[in-house]
Length: 293
Ligand SMILES: Nc1ncnc2c1ncn2[C@@H]1O[C@H](COP(=O)(O)OP(=O)(O)OP(=O)(O)O)[C@@H](O)[C@H]1O
Ligand SMILES: [Mg+2]
Image (cartoon, rainbow, N blue to C red):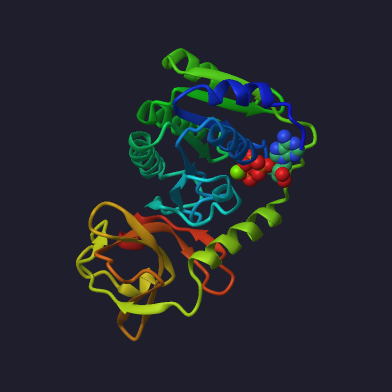
């Protein structure tokens, strides 16, 4: 591990507020987040980590944004168990920018009130209309005090230029260390499957569900078999997500398989089906599931 970023980390630990990390896949965002939080703890700051990477998740399962309060350096060794979760419902930003931005802003705002420094890790979608729209609105709603953009070449140029033009937030550019090696798509999906497996540990409890508990609401007369294998977020009735579940339809009965059934008040439909054995996810369009269009 090189210490290219040591001066930047030293500078950032002197600040308070929200620091958002942007960068493509494997640019060292999460490693930097850990180093920054460790350094901030040394200065006596109260620290929180918001993991808004819904694909390569660190806190909580993929498809969710997770918040973890970092009270002690040892918390940095095990970031998987979230203190609070918000369900987004996909591993891709496409089509769910609203859900993604709102989930992130909700947890950032909660963390901001309770800590000195909030570090926000983000998804690696940094190009094209989706990437730019996502980062624009995350910045608009989360109001970070500083943004760090990690880049290998010039790939962050358009986003950095846009953020500097539209917001007063300071944007720091950081070079990716040449020792950081990209991971393969198989490695990434393998890691993701492990994260889902941890969140959906068997044996999952089956809970019968009524068709009135969903958001968005199911259309009248929907053939519930169409919901089989859909991933859902279990909601506690106070705006928070308790964890994930998988819908199962058999013989006309709809159930949710989960480890978080206690206290669930409603189910949010995601935009993926998930294979219960491999945890491979397939994107679906909710409108198509519900209305066939
Ligand atoms: N400064 C560094 N020096 C050497 N290796 C590093 C450094 N930063 C990160 N790495 C290594 O590079 C790999 C990718 O780092 P990391 O997971 O932090 O990137 P990321 O941008 O969060 O990736 P992802 O897109 O998967 O979320 C890891 O194996 C990590 O150990
Ligand atoms: Mg990461």
